[in-house]
Structures are given as structure tokens and as C-alpha cells.
Length: 103
Image (cartoon, rainbow, N blue to C red):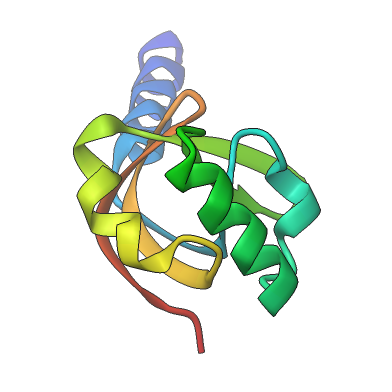
């Protein structure tokens, strides 16, 4: 029985580290959830903050996730937009495999 529980726990841990798909908004670390609406006003603010040196973040519902450094080039054309990301989540950081505008 203990071996079965351990196998389930290990499978769950592997599952959380596997590729996932989320829909959310690329915002900035200063404003975070405040610009999750991706309105024109929000997009301008987020783009200005990121251009000014603030890190981009990914907002999904009430959660704000960091975006790993390797993914910065992939998200740069989507700052302030609602997007769909395919990637991996580890702790509070998203690694982006693919990104596209949300439908």
C-alpha cells in the first residue's frame, strides 16, 4: 500500500512539472493583476513599465507568475495582451514553450 501511495505522489509531482496550457494576461511586476483586463489603457501602462525595466509577469485569475529569463524574447510582442501559453510551471515561474493571442 505504501508503495502505491508513493507511486501516486511521484506521478503527481511529475504531472505538475509537465507541459500545461493557460490563458491569461502578460502584465508587469509593478501593476500585476491591475491590468489583467488587457484594455488599451492597461496595455499602454504595462508596455511602459516593461520598457522602463519592470519584469513582465503572467496573470491567470488571482495568480501572478514570474516568467523565466529564457522566455523573455517569446513574450515581448505580447506585453499587455491576453494570451494562451503552453509551457511549464515550477513553483511560481512559467517557462514558455509557445505563446499566442487568446481567442
